[in-house]
Image 1 (cartoon, rainbow, N blue to C red):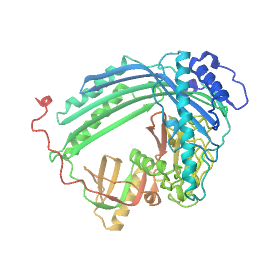
Image 2: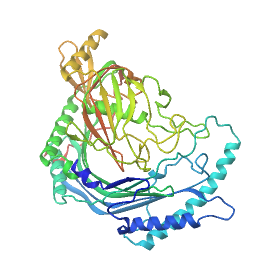
Image 3: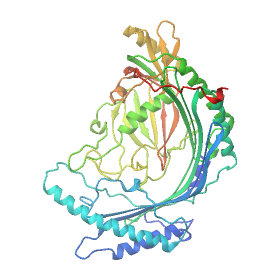
Image 4: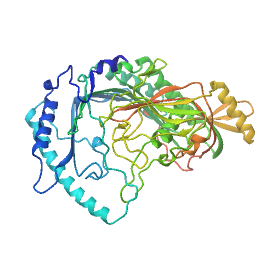
Length: 528
């Protein structure tokens, strides 16, 4: 990807000097380094432990946002954004003052918007002092608590990782500032054409920021984060009052990755047609049987059940479970035997399409690499950060947006079927079960009955699959030959899931509730 290549600079693993883009030209980085040096040489209360770990993380950049409702501009803003996070740990890697809250997800305000060296140092000084005092108190309480209980197989509090130096070129918010206000107005104006709608909005956001990380372990990073998004959404009600909505979001590294205005307007028209069809569609009924998830609906399943379940999270010392749904399944089958899962943040494209979950180091500065998670349906590993768990003792470079998370997650099948054969297989299963129809989900809000007698599709409204359970991954009986990338926003970063359509042998679907809000007494003024 050209945008990613342009953002990258020199990458050096510890001990090698930087060759370009010198840090001395960066006032924020210089202030972070100088206050770090003073902290390490002088910060210690009398008769108290010195910090064994100190880290400064900061973000500095700019953002632009504009939105419209029913063709009228609703907001527009642009300005600088800066934030700071300081972590101080006392104790050691085995037992320290950490209390379970996640440092790299706790960016706060208080950092001046200008490159004022003295102001930045002043804020760092006060934040470091406060964190140090709090850390001393937390470690005292923690040691006292541990003396009163027996904790078996307690993992260390922090893992040792090889330090990394990475300095990327600084970000630049290069956007077409005339296009996007006009685009959100034009796209949201489509929703005016249907007076049955009660809301229709479009929003564009762009951000470019530099993320800094310095620690006393010789981690030194300045990485570039550039992201653009376009969102559109609309709501209506059926005659019986059932709330109905649809939404979509397009992501990119730059605004050049987003669809053209004509494609966005076409998506809005398709959204209107879908909502009008939903208003007339029959309500869903309770159902247990085969379900075919196509495209983005399959991606939603894997995101909810697999990507979130692969997070390696830690149990507290009090025994409260923080584990994921798959944490105890390492070495066991969690997926169909013909399926395999790998996460590879180094990949930048799939079949010519860009991947947005790529990165070189994670939010803790740990180098990333391809990670095989599932092979022949058997779980091999979990995502991990520098907070050890009973299952994973070291980081594998997947600390993202405040927790262990995916980068580019590839779900692959060794045996696949074309889309039409997947539907035929669904009908076969339905007939075997003696059911009149099966269920086809193209999006989680776009669900159809597929009738066994003639294969016709009927849109239904109000279908709900509830909280999906990991068990359904083992019930996948077929996968499509249509794997494609689907992108998700993690806040400070993005992840991409490359998934095929999937056919699940048995799943419950619930009908909607019986009561709904009343519809407006008067019709829309846009209806004349």
